[in-house]
Amino acid sequence: MPDGKGSTDDSIEVEDNVEIILRGPDGEIKQVVKAHNLVTTVGKEKLAEQLVAAPGTEKPKYIAVGKTETAPVAGNTALGEEVKRKEATTRTASGKVLTMAVVFAATEATGAIKEAGIFAASSAGSMYARLAFEVINVGAGDSLEIKWTLTYE
Image (cartoon, rainbow, N blue to C red; front, side, top):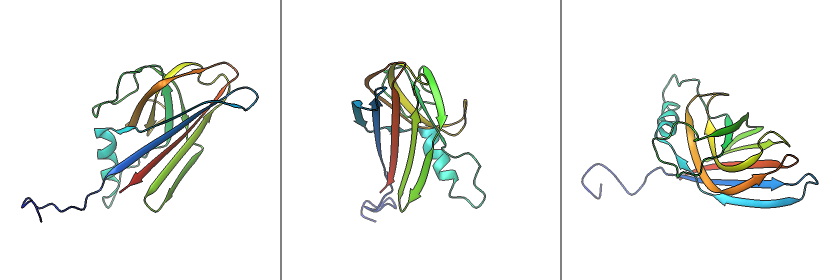
């Protein structure tokens, strides 16, 4: 215990990576944004709850997008201006990596999209992670793909 406080150099950290792909009506890639998100305080608490003998049923299942560009902070519990939330079509865990993905089809999430989050419910619910990014202008015929990867180190 190097610091005398009961800790060691081994710790659990969450590395977060999000890839967002905007595709035009023809399927051609128009824009790609790669960024790192912030795991919220509530998200960390909910992940820790999964380690008890009788974990709560609330798990990260939904990805939402919104229009607010304010920087994420640990205390966030919602997006600034949510546009659309959808259940992830892919949710897989392999080793220490959780991957979630969703596609917002044409007309589902249009406008100036500037934020995204992971949630436990189809409305309201706990927000596990949030990210703000450069604006993605989604037209009526465009689709938006989001792949969210959480790696536990």
